Image (cartoon, rainbow, N blue to C red; front, side):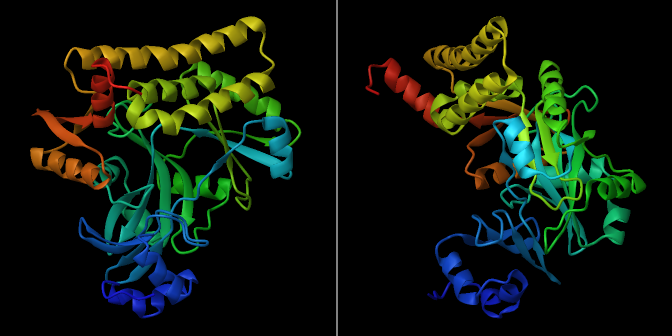
Amino acid sequence: MREKNIPPVLNNGEISEKLDIPLQKLEEAYCKGIIKYYKEHGVKALQFRKSLRHIESGTMVTLGDEMEVIRGFPKIRRTLMLYPALEKHFQDEIAVEEKMNGYNVRIAQVDGHIVAFTRGGYICPYTSRKATEILDLDQFFQDHPKMVICGEMVGTLNPYVSHCYPEIGKLGFRIFDLREKLTNTPLPIIAKRKLLLDYGLEPVRLLGIFPIKEAPEKIMEIVRELGVNDREGVVMKDPQMQLEPLKYTSSQAQDSELEYALSYPFDLAQAFLFSRIIREGFQAYEMGESSDELRERALRMGESIIYPMLNTIHRVKEGEVAAEDLIIEVDSEEEAQEFIRHLRDLKVMATLAEFKDGKAVIRRIHQSTTDKINNYLQGGLY
């Protein structure tokens, strides 16, 4: 399969060799839209919109002075039951790191410039700028140019997922992996933490390394405490990083996600609802909760579903648009508009609601929710 719009760089065999994927498969993937040509923020690349064989979604093949492969971050699978899953999946020990409520970012050096890639492989201009302000990365990438920093951007001025962490405040970055660009091979837990310490870079919290027999009970205790403190959950890893990690989240985090999704039910709820309810059911079963604890969980989950949706219906009835305001700190209105253009590239409808004193209010509009609520309020059928 060949089409005239296939980029010439895809035909020279170098990418095929680097990725260990036959040239014909790459061309077919390009024609199907699995691979897209990307040219934004001074970077030219081939972007993998979906996974292809062993190459992860979000992988970027940059086409600058040097052709480089920056692999996508692997999907982390979730366990619903700690006791059987951990013993089945891991071997001797389990390292438990905190899973933070933000957005996944990969930071790499491309043609001498430090850029931040979102999970899907897009360069976020706001995150790229803020990452270099928050972190001192020059020496790290001078010494380790083939390394990718994988972490979570978190804080109250996080434009994707705003969450309050008292120790972070407005905006911060915590690193959970260091990986090789081409192979995606991660450093072991202790080696990673030592290297980050050498460069003054902060990792996510290591909550313990536990023998496999003790791990489920220890992790259950940790997750309970995290939930009470409005924190998300844990990622469980083989200390040598030779096995795939697993994740597990608190009930409070799951209900917070339900609350957000049901605020915009016709835009977000279908993608959120079923999986979170399933997690709650299995977690309640494994924790063996008392009738009072179970009633509290059920009440919390129900309130997370009905109240935000009802609030949005009232707002739309009063003539408002179903929208959320995100605040970012920028040096100019043009920087704010640049971020809005980035959101629109991601198919997110957004406008600049206000810019004052270095703060931009970005209004993200959930049009489907607005339109459908109006329709049903006027007698439309479901």
